[in-house]
Amino acid sequence: MIVKIIKRGDSTGRRLGRILSPVLAYGTNIPLMRIFITLPVVLGAAIQLLGGATANTFQSLEKARAAVRHGRARPAVTSLVASGRYTQLGPVMRAVMTPVGKMPQRPYPVPASGSVTVTLLLPSTLREEWHLYLPEIPEPFLTTTCLKAGEAFQVQSGPKHLPTGAEVRTLQNAPAKDPRLLEYRMARTLLAFALTASPSFPISFTKTSALRSDASVDVIHASGPNGFTVELAIDPATHLIRSMTFPLAQATLGNAHAGATPVGTMEMDLGDYRDADGWLLPHRFSSKSGGTVYEDITFDAISVNPHLSASVCGN
Image (cartoon, rainbow, N blue to C red; front, side):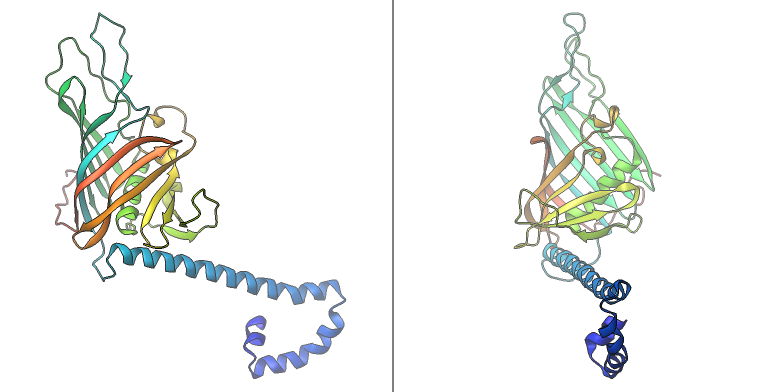
């Protein structure tokens, strides 16, 4: 308060200055008095820096939110449905087995592709349907993952007709059953499409000065419940999200959660921004870790705030 009054230079500040001036002149050689004089100045500077950082973060977020809204006022996102195609690459292991009895059973890595539909219903429902097609098998696998009110479940079904002598086992890289991982995925999806958060999963933002190989982006750190964390790299020219980086341990890709907690980060690149119900939304998501691309998704259709039944994930 003393710093604020003196800085403003009002009558109270001048009176206070006249009262303190003899003391300050005499006390500058006393260590304790030096601390008394310096501390408010340091605290004031720190408060200004923190206030400036908060203001910059708010401005960056508001510009990014305005960009995806085409600069117009729009209703808050309460539901979303995105459908498209995906390819999983890299060291993803798919359990397509060799003919039983002729050769040792062994899974082998192949690029897997199929269709995906992601459904969000706020405050806390996520449903994902993945149709997976593998070589030598004409019919798809179907994996349905649901998160509702903090509870998660998964249903997998395989093709009815298999090549003669082939044995197909459960996919090794099915999404983790840990509800927290699906909550993280839902939170990242909301951030990617609308830079918003569900009331049931509040998120706070801070602007970071962390060094990155790409210095041409604004980096905003988002954090939430249960250790949720993600870095948003925002293009300062378009104000659109270029990428999202988060701990590999919080990803639902791969078989990372079958054993020890994975170390490292997953980077999800966002691109192909196009209009969807009046919003400017990314239609392509490419996830990679350690330079290896794990998953590439292209959404052909995105619907914002469609009417959805509360039984999206069943009763």
